[in-house]
Image 1 (tube, rainbow, N blue to C red):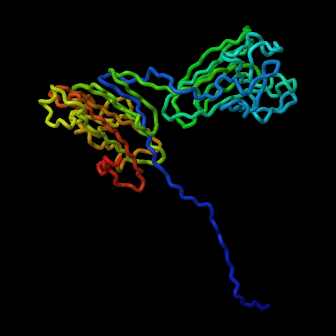
Image 2: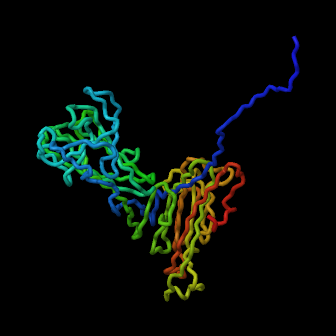
Image 3: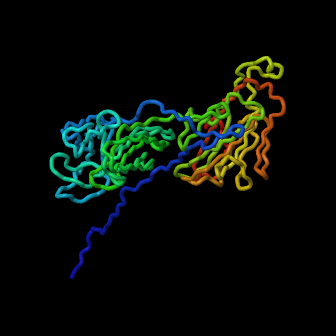
Length: 445
């Protein structure tokens, strides 16, 4: 046997596809969870609904409109009026010889006895207008006879909201007359957060009885899903809902004659103000706790306080003491102490809580919250305590006591205004081993 030599070669190719390098990110979010002025705490109150009702078709007045002689009818998701969508609550198997419709349906009722006293009696009326909905719906409507099918439904709207803002949700619920608690249960949600479970007993009742419920929540997304979900027995009986409204709340309270505001985790805007005091006097003091959230990657955090002095007006009693009549002097008398407030209570507790900066001069200083080699962990929550004083501030690093003395002369600061700027800066720590806050230019962040 003869083997001939050729120019052919053995070969093989292996290929790895869809390899991805994706850039990470660092995102800092801030909330203001505590503020005090001269020992009085800021607590949100006096919240006033503002703007327009954000719920569309809030009273279920239509479209769609019930025209059937019985005074009720069912409508597919997508035909349930502006804004509203419907889903079935539970999974199910065929019932009574019928398959549950793939597209969820919601049941609308109309006022008054329209010919079928088993369904709509004279006393079954909406809270407002002429229509309301039932959250234990129906499969086939008037096309066939089917009773007690598992038809619990949820109805929802996705509403534009502002992250960190508070909202007030109001709605009216009635039991189904003649049915007990197990037939009249409704769950209410803002996104996936439960707001309330409503129950009502309609046993031995022949008329609807509407009760108003009010819930508040803070938006965590730019779109918030408002959901009303039927619960209890899944048998096509019960759970009435009407007149839903959602308003943004304007929440401020008076703190020593001045307004204050607290907010939850968010990106700061120009309207997020930590200090707003229009008549501070020597010896006045206050405290704040700021919560810092670093999303995703481990990072360093710095803060700074600076701003602009305004002479405002030069009054007679100020003139003998003011050598710079075109420049305000207030900032040089405001002292600030900053620390890591581990239990976010606004109280400095050494030695476990670490002092970061003390007795700022003209407030123009960096606060080194987390520097190399000790970054904060991505996804963690950290708390910065701040104590300010108009006068001389003393910090006892053994007991944690912080005092403010107004003794002395501050006459050159009369009527002056200091417009402070509180900034926060974060930078990734990986491959960045030598970061320190003092290297930052205060004017660049």
